[in-house]
Every structure is written in C-alpha cells, then in structure tokens.
Length: 318
Image 1 (cartoon, rainbow, N blue to C red):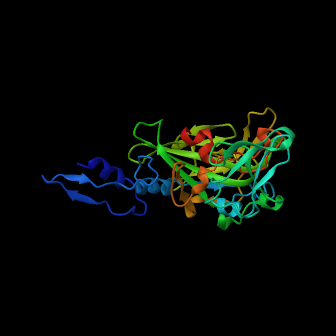
Image 2 (tube, rainbow, N blue to C red):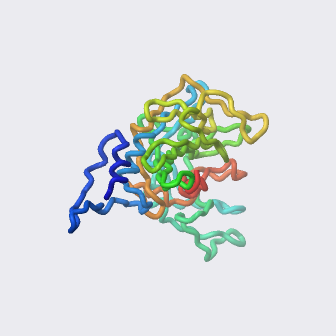
Image 3 (cartoon, helix red, strand yellow):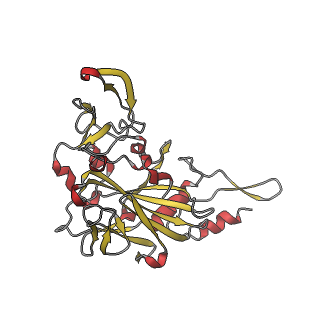
C-alpha cells in the first residue's frame, strides 16, 4: 500500500503538486506509478517543490540608508558581466565578452594556462570544473547595487537529510552582486543561504542559518514566522543570516554583524526556482554547473568572488 506517501502528501496544505497516478495491480493492490525525478535526487520533484514553496523564507534586509548592496538574480547578473581567466603573474584573458555569458554557455568554456614569458601552454581547464581561474566581472561598480526588488529571486536545492532519518533539507540560496563586509573583507558576488530541515512527512524540524564560514541551527520556537515561512534577517553588507534584528559577533574579533528592522521585506515565495542537481539541473538552471568564481579575483581568497552554490561545501551538508 502507498499509505506512507499519501500521508506524507496530505500533510502539505499548499497548492496542488499535480494528480497522483495510481494503477490497479493484478490482485487489486494499489501501487505507485513512477514519480517524476528530473534531477535524480531520489525525491519526487512535485513534493520537493511543495516543500520549497511552503518554507520559502521572508528575508528582512537592512534599511537603504545603511546597506546599499541588494539582491539580484543570475540572469540579470550574467547580462551585465564578462567572463575572464585569471593568469597569476600574467595578464588576464577574456573568455566571454561583456553581456554574452548565459546559463547555456557559462559551463562550456575552456582556456589554456600560461607559462614562461606568459605564453599559453597545452594545459587547458574547463569552466564546468572547480577552477577558480575562471571569474565573472562587471564593467563598473553600478552592478554592485543589485537589481530592482521585482527581479530578486531565490534558488532552491533539495536533498535527503543527513540530520533527520528519512527527512529532507531544503536549501534557499540568495545571490547578491556585492558583499560589503567588515574590515574591508569585501568582494564582488555573494552567495548566502539557509537550509530548512523537515521530517519524512514534511514537518519542520530545524533551520540552519549560514553566516560567513559557519552558522547556527535553530528550532521553530527560536525563529520568527510569517505563517509557514521562517523570517531571516540579512546582515548589513555581509548578508549573513540571523534569526532576529541585533548585533552578532563574527569570527574576526572586534567586527560585528548588524541586522535591522525597517528595511525592505523580501518574501521569497513570490519568485523562486528549483535548480535541481549539478549533474541534472531543473528549470533551465544550468548555472549550477559553472565551477568558477562569480566575481573578480582579489588579493586574497576572502576578497575574491566565491564559487557558486553547487561548488561550495554547504551544497551537500548544511
């Protein structure tokens, strides 16, 4: 019998995920038809989309008088950058001209390294591997301000939970064109996220709020809510995620994060997309196959653009 699946789906009160197709077995037993699992993660696509919509967070940003670096979306950003290749000690090379990077070509590029006298060698790297030499770069600082609020989008990744047996992790990734962090540790492009963990029936268990290189896990009673949507406070400049407005210490002594009330309220359930998996993207979100940096290469790794979500350790953990 399919009572476990029917019970699991009946606990969700959001928009229908489509009809369940059932067929009669020879002896009259009801059996499951094949589920749809485009991204091959072992989770019914319709079910993970229901969870994604149910728990999509409300993000409260700092007031514009305090923080000017706002969110954007991937396609908006790609239309305003070019792709370059970092040759340490030699001039960089352009790989894709300004405004030509797309979700389709982002992960299909290749480029040779440089050797003695800065001549290209026979060693060629591909942009669909974890190579930080590839990077995206805006032509000027205006892109750093982010997109109009109507263009903000959250990127969802679902996986089976390692924390709760039979449960699920729903990750919500936020993209900002700029991280204006503390102590001049700023950089172009910023990927932040939270992860909601549920039990096998889709009931909330806890949420991980990422902050810099770490983060914290919270129970339902430790969070603020808008219906089924957990509220996230995005820190001024760094965009680290916190459960309330306030001041939070960071790993750098003397430099704190600050989150506020009174700024823009981003209800992410109005504009989200399920990206699927790196090996099998969903909804045309092929950007997750790109392994390079999303911003300019700085003097330090901490002042350089980060890699995308699927090339970060959190993708398969928190």
